[in-house]
Length: 185
Image 1 (cartoon, rainbow, N blue to C red):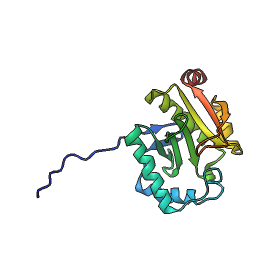
Image 2: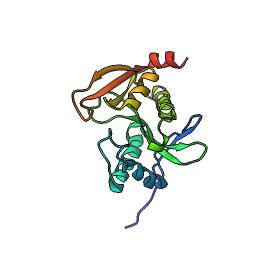
Image 3: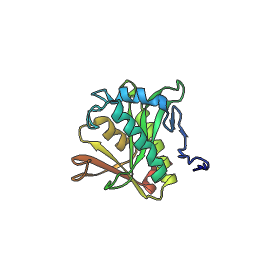
Image 4: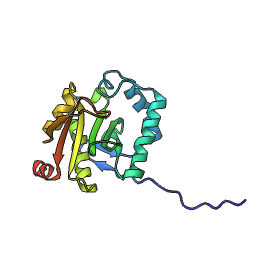
């Protein structure tokens, strides 16, 4: 049997550059720092608990695959100046999700610098430019003061405490396309 090969299929992941961040596709070199981040109890407190390298690798392949299936997803977040891996941010939609979510998770040693806000703002910009959705959400643990503050700072409005799915008992904040446009003018 003779095999014939065509051109490989590529997953197109746009790169978004902000003043301090590069939101980009995942690299093999991201696995170790992402696994270290996912092993930190404080970082993972509101994200279901710590996970190891195998689960981290599955997450990265899942997050990368979202781009192929849905044409949006989570980026690896890199410090624009230093070039180091900082975490993940972007858009997410899972089966049964109430809407497309914008989300971020950064290394704990970079908390409190406004980087999460900057990453979520970039995800909102991308979401409203690239998707047909007229509303985006973020789902935050009720006790996660930092993420709840980011949602409010970016003009998102508390909608409800979710009562179903993996987001059960979490805050759901939402913002419409028109509200985001007014917020960024």
